[in-house]
Image 1 (spheres, rainbow, N blue to C red):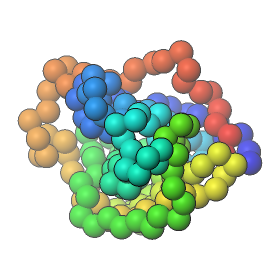
Image 2: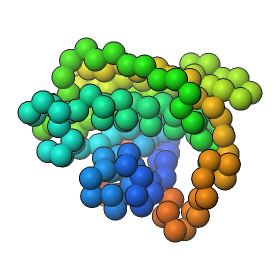
Image 3: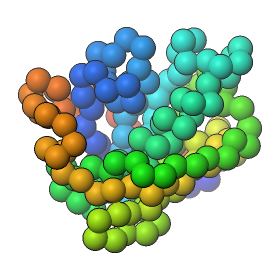
Image 4: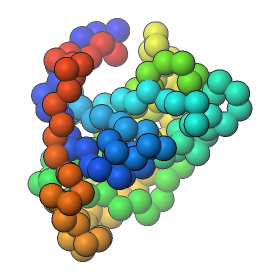
Length: 169
C-alpha cells in the first residue's frame, strides 16, 4: 500500500446514473485523476444497489468499471472527448459489500486514433481485487454523442469537503 497524490478531479453531472449528483437512484460517483496516470472512481453503495443481500449488484459493478475506464481517456484528451463503449467484459472474483466505500482504479492500456482500450478493477480495503474489467472504446466528441448542454446538465467539477489530496492504494 502506498500514498498516491491526486492531481485533479473530473466533472459530475446532474442526472447521469454513474456521476449524477441529483439522481436519487444513482451512484453519485466521484472521479479523481492520480499522479500515476490512472483514474480513481469512488462511491458509497446504497441499499438500492444490492443484488444478493448486503452485496453490490454485479451489473452495477460492471457499470462503475465501464464508466471509470471510459472516463480515463479524459486524462489525456480534452474534456469534450469521451469514450463510447464498443466491447466490455469483466471477471467477478469476490463479492463487493454494500457497507463500505467502493474504489475503482482504471487506466488506458492501448490508444489509437479512433479507439482506445482500458482496464480497471474494483479494489476492496486491504488492496484485494474484487472485480476486474477491460474494454474497447470509441473516442468521440460529446457533441456527436448527444445534445449536451453543459449548463443544463450541470457538467462541472464539484469541490467537496472530503475530496482527498492523496489516496492510499
